[in-house]
Amino acid sequence: MNTFFDTVPRSELYLFLVSLIAILFAYWLISYFLRKFGRDPKYLLPEGTFRKLSWPIFFVFISILIRSEALRTILNLNEHQYFFKKTSTILFIFSVTWLMLNLLKIIKKIIVSNYDVHVENNLKARKIYTQFNILERIFMFVIVLLAIGAVLMSFESIRELGVSIFASAGVAGIIIGFSAQKMIGTVLAGIQIAIAQPIKIDDVVIVEGEWGRIEEITLTYVVVKIWDKRRLIVPTPYFIEKPFQNWTKTSSDILGTVFLYTDYNVPFDAIREELTKILESTDLWDKEVNVLQVTESKQNSVEIRALMSAKDSPTAWDLRVLVREKLITFLQQNYPESIARNRVLLEKSTDEQ
Image (cartoon, rainbow, N blue to C red):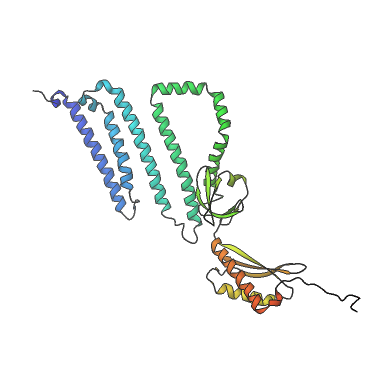
């Protein structure tokens, strides 16, 4: 009685076994190096790298195996050659796309892990985070789009249909282009933000009169976290087309101001000394700027500006509040007559004389 293997040509069986062994060896070799580099401190791949790459690589090898003629001969399915080839092609495209997307995430994780956005001087880290967050979405969109196109173009009927449609769709394309102009402009604005970086992740900005931090940047919109925990959703073209304030464009340190309106007989030197004492008594001050100036003289008061520096805008806000309170208390306790007031001159009437 003949068995299944007796009916299979020996050459085809040996070829299939050699192919299978080669694929298994290649998969083991790649897995070995991924595990080794993941443990080596010099390379130290991110946690989960092997798990993210092993399955896509496995399916790449499976797609190659499905395409082999030896497999069809062994299974006695040579008449289904078209089915095997298309399955292999689609599986290969799917696996390579999956592999590229995972590689993109791993590369981003490796690069971003070298920068900490939580440190005091985090300008470079915020630049890297912003660029990779936006560029990752762009590359993912392009990779998936190309993969879908490759799958569709692998079918002859769809390819011919696509060529005929493109040949006769000139006018329709123009109409669609005008209709999608705003969407395309929004996406291009997102790309421009990634390259030019007028804003970055964690930047302190004032948008539409609201003070907040840039929490998220996508291709189509930006999320601004307002100081009171509200979220302001702004289209990306806004930051290209309209003016806005960015308090941390080049550095996070910032100057804070406190204005006082006092009487003309106020002792400026005493207030200047008190400002220095207040700043030296708090950790909110970064010991860079300490200035008190008379910036305006009005009919009934004098405008005094206290200028101070802090490491970032939230600290500057707290420092301004502290200095304002302390200076007002100082004037109340020591120079109450220096507080601004309206003077009224009373003259005796002729009747009283």
